[in-house]
Structures are given as structure tokens and as C-alpha cells.
Image 1 (cartoon, rainbow, N blue to C red):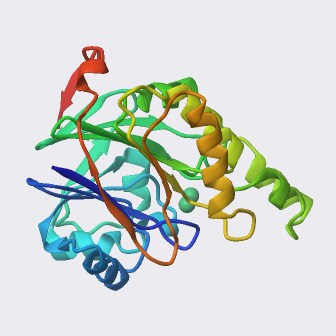
Image 2 (image 1 turned 60 degrees about the horizontal axis):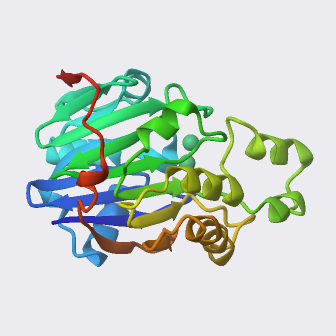
Length: 273
Ligand SMILES: [Zn+2]
Ligand SMILES: [Zn+2]
């Protein structure tokens, strides 16, 4: 059984956990190690079972506790070459370089990655497959690319940025230049853009959508959920939409590989490292 949980998400820190019988995978570690332990305990997760840490990019709200966790548990860290270079990782932590448009095998975990448009060195979105469950993670980007849509296809669960409400951003106290940067292609995804992307990604096996990285100033959870549900219900979506909160963990949610039968056979070459 696979369980997905958010330890927290937003500009003050991001971390998500995938729990399986084979171990625990963390996607981003953007809180202090102490706070990650506290939040994991709230979720009933034991970080001592950590088997892999996947990092999307080097910004502090995604990597704050990464070095400490890597040193303490000596777990492999999977990230792009650019992200690995940007982090002063402890030498004892094995590194796994993720390459765009290829699948990397880390024991029982398959990771597919796709470069995103963001103001970091080599940011990536990832699709993690474990025990036939596919979970996509995409945040900190302004526009979805063709590659990103391909990466997030056929997922059983999606963790997707729904950063701001367009009216709240326009009427916010942010200066015009900041509003521009947020709404730009290397900025963040609006509720409407996230909902439209989700509508395009919808398929009968999608059972869980976790809306992530919400702005405190320019968004509200009810607005993000309403936008997404509006677009998804028109597609016949019957799953669950939740918001990953910033201050406390959310979940865990059981994700089942219900949709394997809907998927085409993989066409991508396996890459072993
Ligand atoms: Zn970032
Ligand atoms: Zn971020």
C-alpha cells in the first residue's frame, strides 16, 4: 500500500512523503531537520525508514533540512546535476543524477524528471513510480511545457502548484514588478492555470490531487479547490482534491494503482545508475 502525505507546502517550506513497504521517499526537505521530524511524527511516519530523498531544486524552501537528513541517515539524494552541484552535500551521501526525459531506477523506485521554467539552476518536476503507483510532483514554475504534460500523464495522484488567485494577485500590495515576476513564465502557476492543466491531465485513474505551494498573500484554499473542482468535475473526475497546508502536515492519503489498465506500455528507455 502506498501512502502520500504533505509535511507542509508553501514559500516557508515544502516536503512530501511517499510511504511504501520498502521504505520512505521524501520529495524535497524544505524545513529544518528538527521540524521535518516533528511533522513526520504528526503523520505517524518514521524518518528512520527514509530510503531516498528527491530534490526538485536548490531553493531553501525545498532543501533546508536536506544536508542534515542525508548526513544522519546516509540516504541517496536524487536531483539534477545542477541542483546537486548547487548544494554542498555531505560526502557520505550517495548522489543520483536525474536526467531530463529519462527514467532513473533507485531500487524499487523509478523517477522520471522534466526540466521546469523557474529561476533556479536546473529545476525539475518529477514523476515517482513505486509499486505500480505513479505520483507526479510539479511546483515552482510559471507555464506548463509539453514535456511537463508528458511527465504528468497517467498519474494516480498529482501534487501540483496552485499558487495564486489572479484577482488577489492583481489587487495585492505587491509592486507591479513583483506581480509580473510571479505571473511570468518562470514564476508561479495560478489557480486557473493549475485547474486547466489538471483538466488536460485528467484520466479515469486519477484519484487524488494535492494542491501545493499556495501563496499566503494572494490565495485562499477554498478558491484553489473551487477552481480545480470546477474544471475537473466537467471531466468526470470523482477523486479527492485537497490543499497541502503550510503550517501543519496534510494526509496521509492511500493511493492505489487503480489505473494500470488505462496506461500505454512505457516507451522510454530505462537508465540505470
Ligand atoms: Zn523555487
Ligand atoms: Zn518553492
